[in-house]
Amino acid sequence: MKIVIKNFFLIVGFCSFIVAENASYSGHIETSYERLFLPEKEPMGLIRVGTLFDVNQYLSIGPELYGAVYGQRGGFFTVGMEGRVRVPLFSKLEGIGGLYIGAGGGGSAPQGGGLMIHPSLGLTYDMDMASFEAGVSRVWYPNGQIDSTQLYVGVSVPFEGRFWRGDGWGRSSAISYAKRGGRTSVLPDGTKVPTPRDIDHARLALDIATDVLIEHYAPASGVHNVHSVEMTEPFSLAGVEFVIGSDVWYGILQAAGAGAGKATGYMELFGGGGYRMKFGDRFSAGIQAALGAAGGGKIDTGGGLMYRVDGVAETTLFDHVKLGVRAGTIASFGGDFSATSYGATLGYRESFYGLGDPWFDGEANLTAWRFRLINKSYLPTKGLFNDDQVNRIDLIGIALNRFLTPNLYLTGESFWAWQGQAGGYAEGVFGLGYQTDGYRGFHLYAEALAGVGGGGDVHMDGGLFGSLGGGIIYDIDDATQLYLGAAYVRSKTGGFQTKSIDFGVQYTFSLFSE
Image: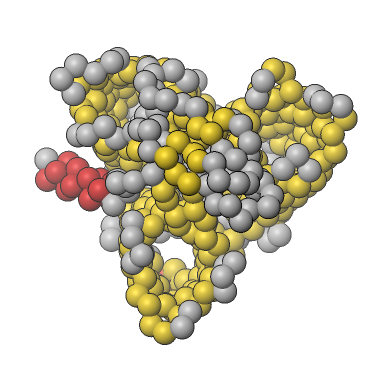
């Protein structure tokens, strides 16, 4: 009970920072590198990627992920939330302090249950388009054997935009914009925002495509599993890819995990860019390349640093829905693994706009989204672990919901073990949910999910699993809710069967899109 209470207040404390009181946001996309030392002075290089949103001019908070890219622990990942405090010193120099709390592990590292605490202290210099940072940090696993203090370097890129607090359903969804002149934009509550007169051209919107990704890896001849004479067998993955940019040049962020074959626990995270040419109104083809971190599932990725190059082709099915195919090569820099990859994507593309800025001449619609911070517990059940131990597994997770109607939504979720002797276990989940209309502040919801998971000696043979569940939601205000739910979870092979209980805080917002 003490653990449940502690988790509850931890989640409430995190999410209270992201409850905004107006329709604007700003923040930084951040990355950093640090080289820490495991027991017996074994080096491991960690790269960090995250998105921090500004609460005010001094405080920022948001989700972050760490992955191993150097050493012997390819497949080591953690995900969590970080709060950062900035203090102006002089000119463009700021002092910065951060506290990250997350969960994860992998790569057979001594992470114990998986809880990671990461404080940092440093200096950052603002170069307008980007900021450069250096300082000292500590990586500490309270229930493991990792405790290291080291230097780090990093870079961050600022961003800003507009949103509507709460969901946009039932409000005016048409927002007028002008390229130039003295016209105005109108908020959903009727407030008029003047458009600047000194703008001579329209700014581009931010185009984002969210793709569900299915891939198959065929290892090259002679590739062996890590520390083994066994040959690496073909395996398949499921994941998600975000494509950001124009019809020609674009950036990508991809995350996937093994779902079939003998690579349970393999995970990867890639970032990169691409170029494509259009052929008519419905077809395009091009090439993309990416660097990233990957490992686990006995796949020999060395320290975890990987690269991939793919040829891609895409066609528009209808409206914003696109179908794509790809083929390419993927390989590690320091390990034995290399493979030919084949894949397909199904995605939805939207253009997101600011509010009160002359970005285009037309109308934008409010699209409702919801961010969740979750604690999930798998109840003690025989068969959860490969060695038949019976432990409860506690995971921390984040989710993003995209509402299709006021009640129906799509969801993408990621969970990482932080307690229960399952350090290194992680999940990626996708599915469909439905919530009822509110009655005195209460809603009921139901979800059908499928995903991939593995690591931490959890008995998730093959990696593919599904769940059915539901629960209750309580409205704190028009944007913030608490929720409590339960689900039945079963792997494809049936070896992993249990019930879960999850609770958390969620925040609903709307973006302006075309």
